Image (cartoon, rainbow, N blue to C red; front, side, top):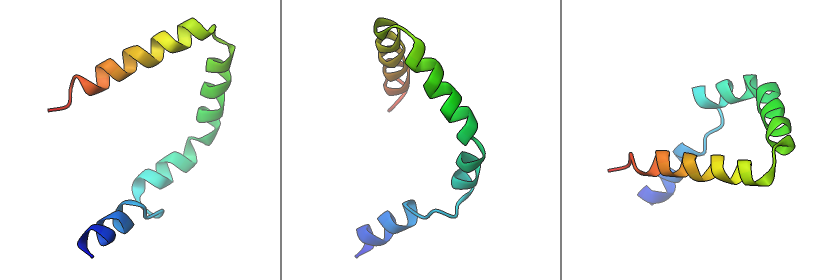
Length: 59
């Protein structure tokens, strides 16, 4: 029961993160368009570098 309640709380759609994300839809679309124009190798390099940067900081 407790786990289910925690999941529900995390999936709420009225939090500040949701409001922030809604305001950034044009930026997200522009970013996706930009990335779609890059060569595949560049996109893969960006993705790999981002994953390393994010996951090497985790405890």
